[in-house]
Image 1: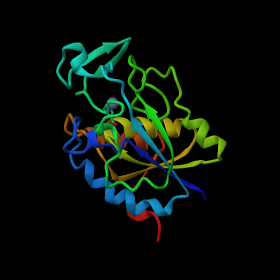
Image 2: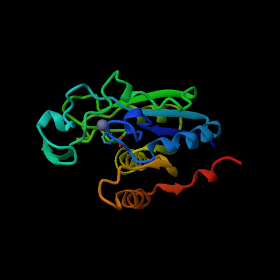
Image 3: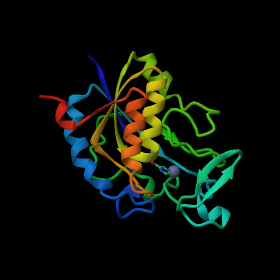
Length: 205
Ligand code: VGL
Ligand code: ZN
């Protein structure tokens, strides 16, 4: 069975020293590097915002964590992060990127955020990831990365909704946990949507 590993936003700004720090975000890198040889296909998403992106608190005179209405949907205000071409937007250096065959850049529209690797938050535009997977007959998608309660969650929900067999490798994900329990809730939502939650020890052997 052809297996695809989908790396979600394994970028400097989501490491503990980054602009939008995810606790222990860097600890998934060694887990992912160990997983890589067990997959025939490896795809990565990259949060890739223009400067002054609408999700940035600084643009609206807000504090990070506040929520605004952005064209009819709730938008959490984030610190400036993953600005196109910046160090923060690069993949974490220790990540072995050799096997990445395709990178999906998202959040590139100034006015719309994109947590999912498949669609923007308004669901106006597809990133092309579904088409890429289907064109190659890639039906089995294993998701890892950052952050569990945002981009990993929405990518996993869309993957299952798009009809892909979807696994989430729990110990290769970390979350923001802005509210205590957010990560556990996110895993429950993914499971309820048909995603299979597994541990990295279930891969290979
Ligand atoms: C993410 C918040 C803002 C993520 C990206 O990768 O989970 N979270 N942009
Ligand atoms: Zn972002």
